[in-house]
Length: 290
Image (cartoon, rainbow, N blue to C red):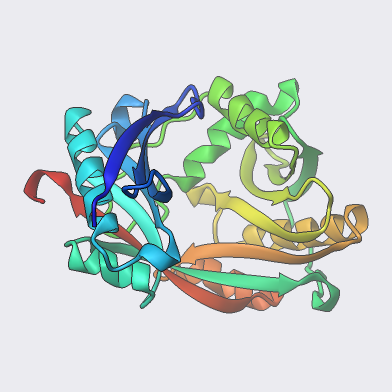
């Protein structure tokens, strides 16, 4: 089968990343597949790039995906990328394709859902702490303290993937929220404050569709190491459930994903009523040896 690959200019440019793309077309010029490579603009993570590869179902098993992958690997090398990362449902055709092309499992994610109608967000307050919340971009007076609290994600399980130190500053914190707003979605954040210091020591973020219907996605929940073991994550998530039901009565479900080895967070989700629904392999490819 004669396939032509055309490099594309992708307008999805962001301050911390950018994408390059390829379109696969058959002899008649019909699109049959595409591939995107998201390059990381932050120096600490420039060795990693995210792969998204799609082939039309009717055109699969004809070598199109392999050709697209070859182009992506070449592009990755040109940009000094050492590792490609991509997700696929465990055991799916995409997962098997990646395995065939020497992608290894870097980590395993367990997705879980909570039906809001069935949720019971009753959780006791944690002595010595209080909860605060906001919508959208963090208020100026909380921006630095919230940014500092993001270091609670630094020791999150990452399997065999070397992400490098994930450095946040106030600019990046604000920008991440602005991107969600620009997509027309709602960002809701609940944070825990240590009453003795006034510092934010934990947070949980949720992104709700613009129309307030369907499913909302957890973006991150973290507690600083010295404040763990008190039940703050469960308390913050329970408050988030309560507020979400009040503000978005037409929303049906909350979705979260957790690394399978993160037993503490999975235990928290289970206690709140989240039910596992899907397992995802985050696979990695060593570009240098492919």
